[in-house]
Length: 259
Image (cartoon, rainbow, N blue to C red; front, side, top):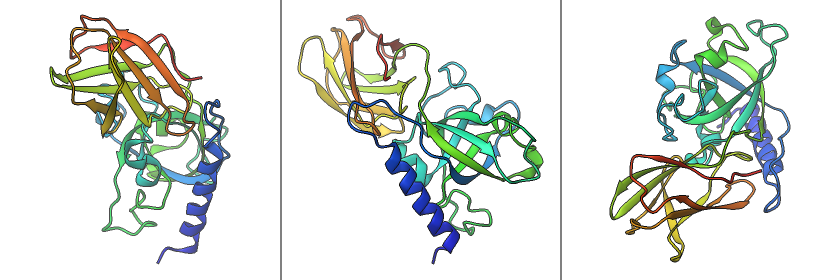
């Protein structure tokens, strides 16, 4: 049976997420502050944070850097939490740096549950906890790393990105896999469709994390993508983002993004 504190936390998370679900085509707005905890993984180089369950690869090359977090299952949402942005501030611990500002991080990984440990004694990412496993550089901006774990307050905030949506393409002539990155606004992606030339839209299914796949022959013509946010349901169309001579293994940037 969950402890009363965990039940209260779960209710707070549910209420906060409801507040974030704005009307269709609305701009994403910040959530209320909610209590949680934060740990860190890796070392000062943040090498262990590269890659991750969202599939963003080298986070320096893809623009996310070291201001990143692995989310507990409750926040990760089977990959639909990838790309979301959070402000986090250390709260109520002697390990917090006095006067340290809130940090802003992007979700790039999953912090998996550890069912062998109690949720209050090591199983920090077990449901229904909201928990952030930060890169060590991000953690050290708000607290002393020797703490290991600190209480925090967090809220989801709009993602501020430079440039348009980015699509990293992989696959083969009969299967296209697109990693959707650099998503502004709510930061998350629920649905993706692709169109080759002026043909019909082909709905892509989620493969894992922030990657979506289509089993179709799409080569030889320009590619357009239609992307829908998981939280706001806002949809944008990246028309002809990849020219007719597009190649697998490259990343293409659109002229549009979410507001």
